Length: 336
Image (cartoon, rainbow, N blue to C red; front, side, top):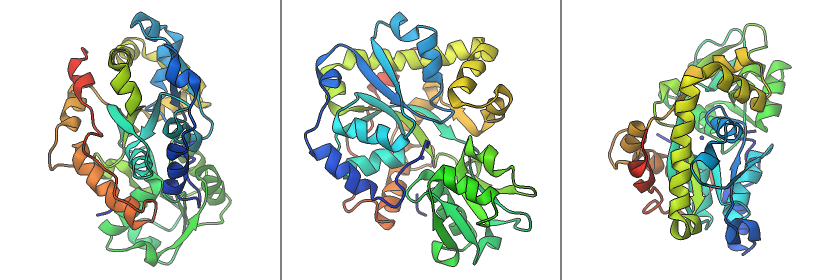
């Protein structure tokens, strides 16, 4: 098995490893990110990261005693490059992209699992295609190197097919969704909210989703190694704020959904439809994920699978170093 915006307006035809190798090793840093007391935290369009907008609006960072500048990125790729270069202190990103960055030389640490994708990443096909096996010989648009590319490979493998059995059409995620709606391709790999766009094509349907591959697409709060080493108390406050935010959302669902839908640029109704497809992790689920093991719910297991994926697709020339990547002390110290 090979082994998560946009979340993933990610690499296009550019090698992620090459991008990260340049940014991470260039020595280019931001004085704000390194010298001030403020922490700059990046995030972009994915339902599992929109709770950060709730934390900002409800003053939960301040309540936890941490000064945070929440920075929105229209381009997910830019947010990854910003963290790898030191321009921001922390970012919301997938395990795929974190491992690609580490392979390129970035010094990063995973300190929290925000969520797992449990249906919001989908392979959507036109009318007449009812299974992944039906994709043989068909045109499938997907953004290369993204978690949806990974999902496509997982689904093909389960159907006893490989990427060579389809006509892969590499496109940025938003363009891929538009091309599918326009009838230019037979199927598309996309994530929410672009799933909503793709399903506007009459007769279209999801033929595979991330719900079928538990644990395969985890999303994280990732920080620089420097932040963890130099300011562990502030990292702890960030993690505490996350769990406080999830608790606030649970108690104020309507108000929270309004904030998150606005940040995502979708209706509240559409946002609510994404709920089951993104499983926000509890503290216990974090502890389970950070515990080393040999099951799909554990991060070290998924990291090995993802490493196979990024090496096999040419996104990395060297296998990323996993030892020390996952730092569990912050979720262990957090209360919920």
